[in-house]
Image (cartoon, rainbow, N blue to C red; front, side, top):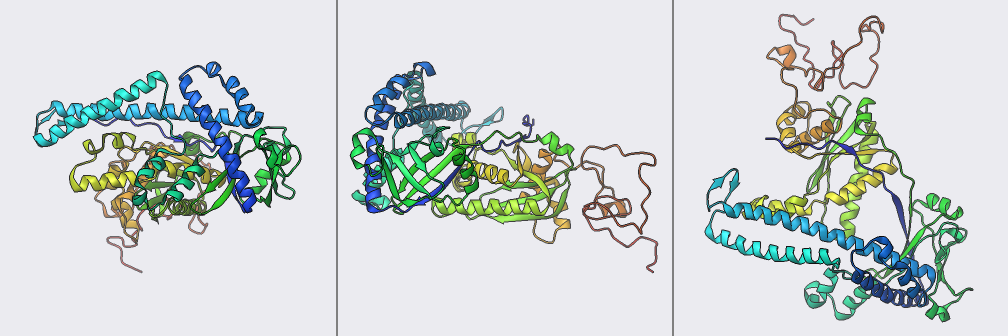
Length: 539
């Protein structure tokens, strides 16, 4: 029985923008920023601990005003507002992570429990038991561990006390395994202190250049920072401010940033330090107006093309699909080498998305169609649903290495700025049906090697436009003339205009339109039309 398929939807446009510029600080400037960051970071951790102790309460009862007044005494009113806002955001994020962990644990416990009921080596009602008693015993132990973890998560959710490690739990654990990570005590300490600094200033509409705490003058690029009250003795500018010796340019999306700061619209600034490179950065971010994007039904009604993309571990398989769901032109393969450091992987992913956007514009596509992948349930159940042994382990590693969420977010932002829309579809059966129904037709019209992933891309594009994936039965026959070309209408039949709505077209009139191949019946041809006719002698 096939599961119910979710309707395709248009991925929303980015709700904000974020740009970055490097700060080439002097020794004095770097020292001042470290002092300010450590001072504010310590008080921010104190406020976060207090927010966790308050627990899950209504917004009016989180005592933010009280905590802000206490924070103002050791900083300033604007720094205190940024700290309390960050504490609330971190607390809510931690709660959402707890809920997600509870869902994941429940899925794993349910799956293992169903298989434990079935005797070893047997299958009951589609549920397969474990192949051996040894593995069944291991799963019983695993079930006890997961149950204990679920009880702890339930207790934390009920109490409203999530566990938060400022600076990152992974980095905290590296402290006890510095030799394996290749870090010395000083290197680890530098990374730990950099991750726990707090140098974030929320924007304020009407303030000078959109932010009073951290201000960047667009005329000359000078940046000034309001110092906390106990550190006012470090000021080198009026009103307890410290002016950096370097300048800020913001080359990327500079015009948008200038439009906001010139209008005194709010802009948030974050100062971060990368100890691995020894560099300081200034990030500017702001919210963007909500954009109403067309729905998949509206796009299909406008007779547009889509670039359908199938995400894989080492490449992207793409194919252009017209409004009727028919593939146009040659399928495309975009390689992705997502290995190396985080910055290298992110850069290669951006390069692949850039190539997709260029292909979409070259083929006059209005947007891109992708699968709404998550693998949440698969990652939760692990070996229970994704195979066992060497082959299953390889497959699980492949799934874990696919950057589904990052790919979607990067594609959403970059496609929006390029004027393209992104449609996400249900990934069910796209690979299976795409390979079954579209791999062979694509191979017959292509000179390159076609894989099942290219067939899956066609299936994704057809589902995004509201068409069925399967090719309509009965559109081909055993007649040589019909087999030589594909019949039109792989989608639902469309009524044709009748009467003298347009003058007849003769062979002397040039063909109008962008169809891939013109035939006597004026149809889209997937295969080249044979010029040989049985019983006809060549001229």
